[in-house]
Length: 442
Ligand code: ATP
Image (cartoon, rainbow, N blue to C red; front, side, top):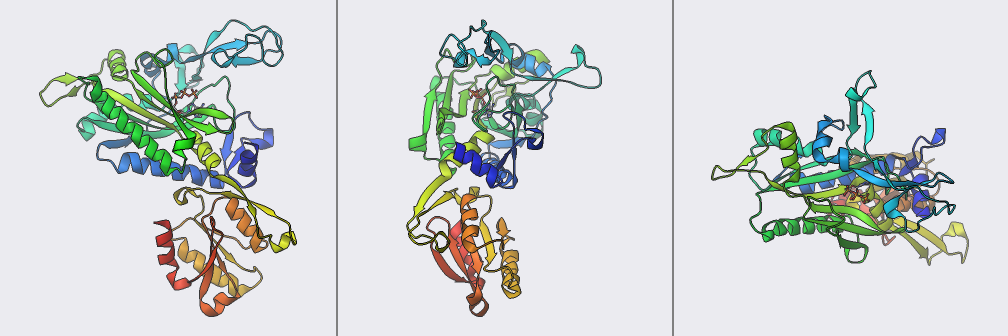
């Protein structure tokens, strides 16, 4: 983890939040490459699960909702963790995460657990009184349920259909940490998939299984070694929400242990029924035979930052180079750090270099190649330092290809293309570059 955190800082993926003020514990800012990586994940998720499917629509609901929402959903009364405090050193813990009965830090006596609600409270308008209390949403899902009627009225979808949403969520976690794994502000990509009330168990089980496979397919697309690094944990009846009939956690082998990456839950008709009851709105669906039904729902829930972390862990590699680079001196073996992102995830797809920055003819030609390639790909132009250093930097940010314009390029009108994974170099005519990369990125 230390290596990953340090690479993220050094190479512009992830910075400690408000660092010039000493930072804010467990809060992180995404730098140029982190922002690209996150956007690539969100865009692809949206395409796969919303745009490419005929049974899905998208939504972008507000973060601050009418507080009645949280009464209906059960978050006001139930969304809490058991908090214990050490009487001696005042450290706080989640009781359900503690194995010992005394403080792990100082051995002091602990208080009895008390319920601590995880929702962030705020006030709407100038008066900070109880009439104006509001909450930052702890999940995006409820924004979907409260818009069920609007979607029905405007889009007229037929069951089964789903609504997908990407957005920020906030939880006042007692034990945030492990870099970006658990933070108080994070982003979710959630789907509520509505279906007719199942007559038999196997009706909902088939839909659940289909979503399970879709999620596994997504994890494969991220380049995760699903067989080795993903474990499915069926949450026991005692631990899952009372309204859920089945919940699976997809756990990933993070460097700090096996922890939840995503969740998949069958939530029955609990949410729509609760909102119908609390709001008085008619949240039913009229079936073909004219009968009014309350749809049941399957919920695939994915965290953006946990996706980023899993991808960073999976892609990180160190390789001993057998060919020592001239700059290192004879016989010295260099270690190369390389992020082997799947191409679609890489923040930069192609880096373009003139061999030397003080040769105007080379720079001019390199700029022309850069201008041509950046129409179709996220490209970066770099003329700083020696070529070896430039390659090393691009390897560390996971750029699949580097294109170098050298002295021969002047005469032959070609470039050297260097492959991130094999480190092999080939010469390609400038006129053929477009086609060359089309094949590579297909
Ligand atoms: P955990 O048990 O780790 O607290 P959870 O079961 O409460 O997670 P859900 O409520 O199922 O999490 O949230 C759905 C998804 O949102 C999680 O699978 C995870 O990817 C993401 N997520 C939840 N809480 C956080 C957090 N504090 N920081 C980052 N991502 C989170």
